[in-house]
Image (cartoon, rainbow, N blue to C red; front, side, top):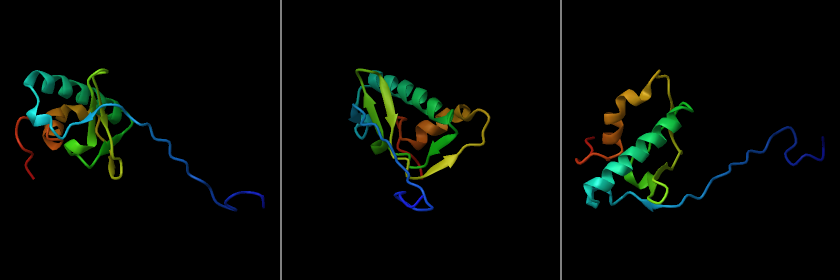
Length: 109
């Protein structure tokens, strides 16, 4: 075992995917029809993420990338997460749209 890179330890490798699309920082300035498509894509991505029992805590538009060609919303920045205990976390979808500033109104703190 003397030839190991980290004797009596381990190495952690993180693989990240570079996603295509554009930041949603300008979400509020987009046409309402496009906002609706983005919300649908976000809901799909959030549901997929919740299926792994993870909820990101950095809920801001800068952490969302939308690819209009694929109609896919990517949630980025997993620096801080909650591990979910809810049976059906998407029941609070409206609350999630507010937390991520995906409603027509500014998020309340």
